[in-house]
Every structure is written in C-alpha cells, then in structure tokens.
Amino acid sequence: MFNNISGEWRCEIIDIKKNFLKAKSISQISAPRAETLIDLMFSPIKYQNSELIIRQSTEMGVRYLFPTSFNRTINTKINLDKFNTYAVGAAQQSGRLSIPNIDKLIDLKDRSNIMSSKTVLMFDENLKGIHLSQAKVKPNSEILVVIGPEGGFEEEERAFISDSSKYFFNVSLGPNILKADTAVIAALSLTFHYFSKL
Image 1 (tube, rainbow, N blue to C red):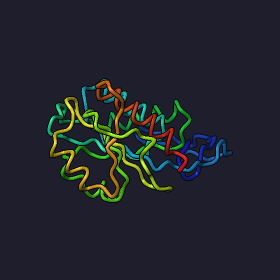
Image 2 (image 1 turned 90 degrees about the vertical axis):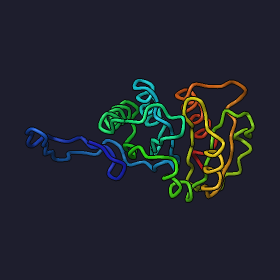
Image 3 (image 1 turned 45 degrees about the vertical axis):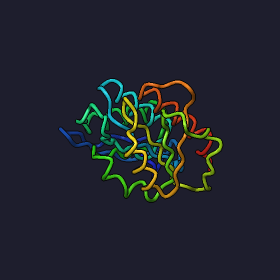
C-alpha cells in the first residue's frame, strides 16, 4: 500500500469483502517523497489520447489535473472514474507514491480562481511565445501548465488566461504545430526539466 504521506508499506491482508479490504502494515518499503508544484490544465480530447495524457502526466509527477472546456473543445464529457483508474495504474508503474488529484470538467471562465494563485505557462501554437528558459519563475512557485484544445486558443481565451494569472508567460514549443496530446507531453517534459527542482 502507498500514499504520499506515509510512503509505501508491505502489508498483510486481514479481511477482504466486496468493496472492502482490511490490511495490517508490516514494514515500510519506501519513505514518502515531496510532491512537485506543477499542475496541468488541458482540453480533453478523444478517448485514447486523453488516457495517454492522464497516464504520462501521472508518471512525470503532475500534482493536479484540471480538465477544462475551451471554445474549440470537441470532447465535452469525461469519465472521472476511468481517469482515476489510469492515474492509479500509472503511479504504480512509475513507482510514484501519490495519485494526482483530477478535477471535474468545467469551462475556462470558471478556472480564474486556479490561475490567480499560480505562475501560468501557456504553451501556445501562435509562435509568439518565448523559449521556456527565458521564463523568470520564482523559487517555490506553484506552476500551472496550460495546453489548449485541438485548433488552438481563441484570442479572448488568451486574454482571459493572461489577465487571470498571478504571473503569466506565453511559451513556444517551437516552429511546428503539435497535436494536443503531443503538446502536453512536450510542455510537461520541458517544465519538469527547468522547474521541478525550484
């Protein structure tokens, strides 16, 4: 058994019934590890691609996942139970001792409270962004990576994200336009490379 507070423990099952399991801890295998301060806001896409986003975000160490509906979002329904199942499997596979918190799907306009407390890195395909190494992120900052829907952000969404953020950086992923799921993995890889140890 494992969690991010107690670490990973070898346990003995005492009782098991339908939807119920009782176990006794025997010995600790791994001590708890500090969580990263990196979160992800993304637009849900078709089934298998959304699964990939959940799994790989979990493996990398994303703390919170915020599925968000943008103007161009096509997939407007998610299955939170399946998302959580993907996250548990990915955590076990990667040796992670915590499960990311996955929020319900809501509109971008209702995410301002999330962005107002974080350093927001908006990875945009408009090619006007800076290289991530140029983003002056303060130590111990809570970082929110934002990836838009297939088809990209609309101008009003760009303005809303910028205005709602505590600190805001428009970031480029290079000259090529990436698929939404590819953009998520590329953006997270860069973000963890530069800022996971801040």
